[in-house]
Amino acid sequence: MAVNNKSLYTFSFKAAVLFFLLLIILGIIVFLFKPGLGSDDRYVFALNELKERNLNKEYQIGFFGNSYNYTSLDPSLIKSRLGLNAIHLNSSAQNIRVSLISAKQALIENDLKYVFFEISGSSVRKKSPEAEKHWFFQAKALQEIPFSFDKVKYTWDYFPKDIYRKYYISGMSGYLSGVFNLNNRKEYKFITKRKYWREKETFFNYNGFIGKKVKSIEKKVFEEKFFGETYKEKTEVLWTKDLMAQMNDFISFAETKGTQVVLTYGLKVYPSSMKMNVINDLMANHKNLKYLDLNTDRDKYIIDEKSFYDEAHYNYPLSYQVTNRLIDSISKWYTIPFKGKDKIDFKIHELSDFFYSLDDSQDKFLRIEYTELPPRELEGYKFVVGFYPKDTTVLPEALSQRNRISEDHYFDLSKDYIAIGDKKIIIKKFDSNVSINNLDKIKMCFYKRGDTLKLPSYNISID
Image (cartoon, rainbow, N blue to C red; front, top):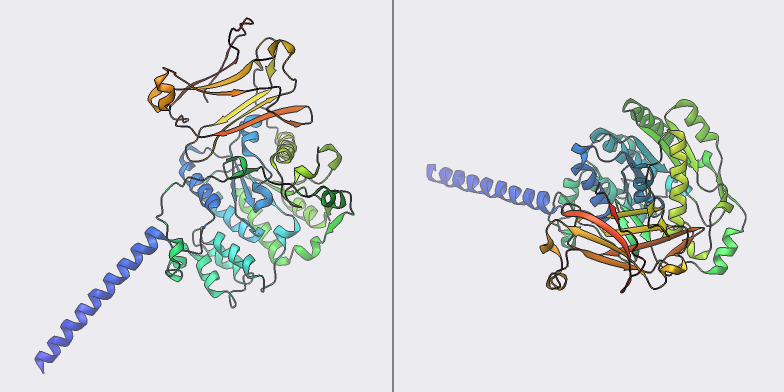
């Protein structure tokens, strides 16, 4: 009998050890590979970027919401005009209730000075329980946010958890999401602190923004919609008591952090307006709240069918205009001075602005802006932007063999531009081993073999 008891004890001990080993293996799989509901790479990149740069307090502006935001508001323009760093913390089809949870977590961890929410009807509307794809997207966004009391509080009655229990539990915790999705092997990804993010069919991607360059809507559709009747949002239906309570709670929390909150109503191809009763009530209760309707004064935009790739999303030339309207508004509201810049003057021609990004984790690109076409004297000249690295060994072998010390980009300022009103804009996205970490200087000049004008070159200071 004693022998049997000993054997049973040994078997139980080995089973327990095996069980705990399996738990450890499971934990390692969940922790390292996190096989969740799938991830929005752009959203995950932005979250990781914000966490990584928190110690330096580099970001002052956070945009929260969905694709209405991240295809319309360009952080590179905000950086260039106001000297403020902005980042998009948006995910596809994200509802404002999820945005508010995400934004509060961001304010707990960071010192954002300005927070923006997009509040068009589709961003605010609570979808029916049958809209499975919508609830999948909410859970997909929620799983990237650490577990908190707010996640439970603000999703308990909102999320149809009885129908989509797996989605709901996955959304509450990224690690629980991993346990519930162990069989989803396509989503096994080794978790790193920082992720590289890039997207095709764009002018450029920057801090979560997508500068779109895709097929536009048909001209007939554009004209029918753009000159059609105004669509009026029913705010009293969209803004439920629960949503109003959550919004009030967030704005009050933001006030304790010294953070300003801005609600934006995005421009659509069709005329639209929002009743101001709800917005006025919110602004009456909170001094740190502003509202910006980007649908007003539509005649001041330069718009045609090429501006939109669907009814609510823009190609870059319209994003440029919308962002500048937002910049003008926040500069006025918060007395933020425009960044003082010297004109880039080549005696007979000048540029109004130049911006570049050489961040290894996202697209490398440059943007040139000017108002006048080059004069006749510059016919046949190429405009050259040269990036000079501190260590020339990072340059391509073909350049090294020619003893070149810079990576040069050539443009014809009379042809290579996009026209937006009186603005002429050149954008180039490129692959390069030159990065912000090894950049020594940037030099610009007009070049032509047998040059007789001898125009001065211009050096750009490295920020």
